[in-house]
Image 1: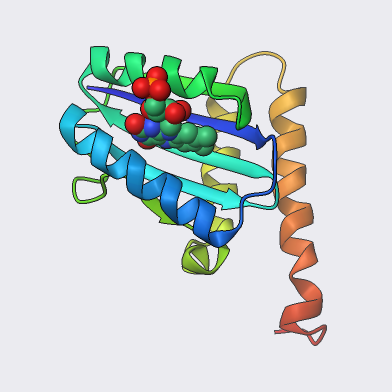
Image 2 (image 1 turned 90 degrees about the vertical axis):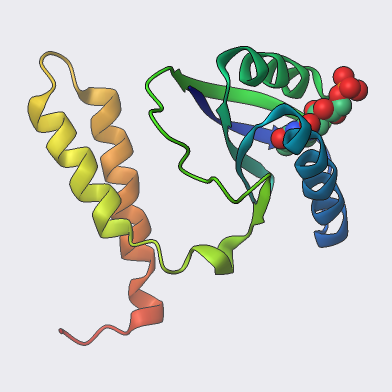
Length: 148
Ligand SMILES: Cc1cc2nc3c(=O)[nH]c(=O)nc-3n(C[C@H](O)[C@H](O)[C@H](O)COP(=O)(O)O)c2cc1C
């Protein structure tokens, strides 16, 4: 199966009802195509993951890329999806509060271990890791400054 994840910039503001409608229409269509995944939105950024039959996923992605409501900035695809990661989500709308359970330290650990194995120039990846460290640092004010 094919999986694609991308980040895009919204052309206009999406309020919650516009987002809910977009996800509902997408779910309906995706059910017909046998595509599953999630759609995350925050500020002016979409992150979407779609998975399913290679041809269906590619066709859907080319439609999504042509959609003037956003501009796709970067996408990564793989054909190594052995089984669906989101079998019960036709196109689940996710917002920030849904993601509080996802721990940034896990992402950071994965990135660092990946870099450890990667030969050659790592500057760009390194920047990505530092951005995560910065994000964690931003939590300081919310978590309090006292040592653990
Ligand atoms: C951020 C974003 C995500 C979208 N995700 C999907 C999706 O998962 N499935 C879908 O059918 N359409 C999705 N759409 C809508 C498609 O871009 C397109 O408008 C729709 O598939 C109808 O295409 P058509 O007019 O060529 O038939 C999405 C649009 C945006 C802006």
